Length: 198
Ligand SMILES: [Cu+2]
Image 1 (cartoon, helix red, strand yellow):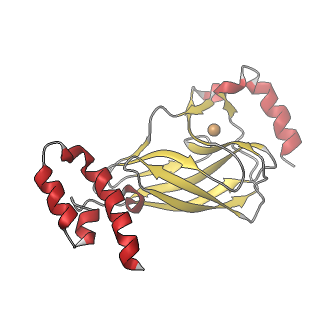
Image 2 (cartoon, protein in one colour; image 1 turned 90 degrees about the horizontal axis):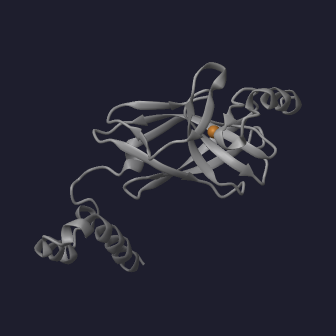
């Protein structure tokens, strides 16, 4: 059984990793393809996958019946290489996901999709928190129910990914307005807050 699975894994990863090298070094490619040491072949330069380098703690998501909501966590890069979070996906609540940052100052703060991947420098951590960077559920078709969990898939720039569970809880804050929502932000926000908060 293992013998049939291995070649698939092997060829996928080596194709990707070695794609850029293939032009200049047919020798190296041949060497790897013949190699029987599959572990060495999967990670030829010995660098960790970004999915393994990033440890996620304190992950939680804001309960919501529909529409938008947000997820927060501490992203800890425990490696000596930068980690780039490129996208987030999910499959349980029928929504697209975005990575947002806050823009503006004071009461004029709005959130918007970040430009490019979210960078977590080597050995550093980035906090996703209300009022700051966060992961956004754009249009829930299934509710985020308190005390349940939401599994989000974090996708990194090296092609690796990992699933992380976010504990869903009630939270009154994080009602940031969205750039795409138009100019009514300030007052509409108050109205929504009173209606949906309790
Ligand atoms: Cu947002």
